[in-house]
Length: 419
Image (cartoon, rainbow, N blue to C red):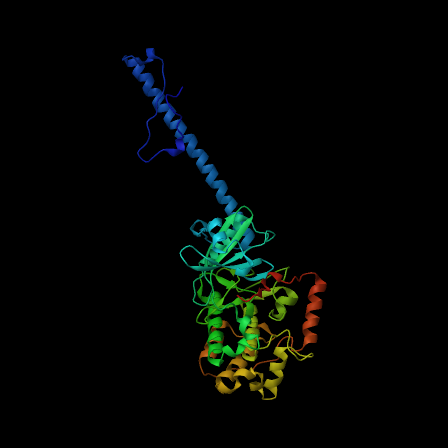
């Protein structure tokens, strides 16, 4: 029988705790026999209890580690040995997020995609944040979600949007990002009124910033990251119009010297996907290079690749035709045509056409892209781009759909609302 309150052995302090054993009064005499009995009891009960507690703790820890390993494997495929400390991930309180977004009011809504809506929020300390409230059918478990966010949070570059943390409560899962004052690139570049705010110098700086961000993902980060969904709506602009790559929901992580992979479920956005990815499910660093090339041509022209006004050609096909006719400058957005250095514009168009070549091996790496954009150097002539006309693109679309391996990534088709 215990004397006094029961004590949870797990709550032992570093200095230890006193244990009291209740015995009959007759047992407490001063005879050597009784003292020996008390000593035996003390030396038996305490070590046995501690041993049981230690065994239980070790079994529980082993079970949790095994569970965490399965979560990482399901998230990253063959990269379950990636070291991730989700315990270091900042967790936001749901109540604070609700207050910051005014209970997710429509007036604070910045946009919405298949993953869920995005809201502007202001924390108690005045810091502004962007909150992506993930839909409940996102298909990720809690540990899986935390591990992925913890890994992405380790990516640190001035041209990547920074994840501040996440909020998890019940089935609610939210990502907390730094807030971008000027929304996304497509908010400006494809709007006839707002596009004039981006003169050539700003557009060129945006092109270089995106290129350096992708270069970091491919070459300079601890792990090689394939974004797989580079497009204008996933390029956010801060208060100084610096570009930051966002939305890593479709990103794939490569370890060591691995440079390519394949998938049975193709995700992405029409017009930005490389042909080998759209048709065969093969993706690599060159898939991102292709997407960057499309984005580069869109920034120069102010036109979307998919909705280009010519019914028989897309933007890539039009750029290729102008290149062969020696009229590449006609691709330039007319609203800024009078204020552009000709050589710089032509070099950018040249690099864009190199990036969208159909042959994977013919496309440059992002390291070469940054070098060609930033330096006047000899550049090889481009070859015919993929999807040079809309018929080719629709043929690729139908062959992929017919194979049953294509699914549109609707979650990244963000619709931006004015504040």
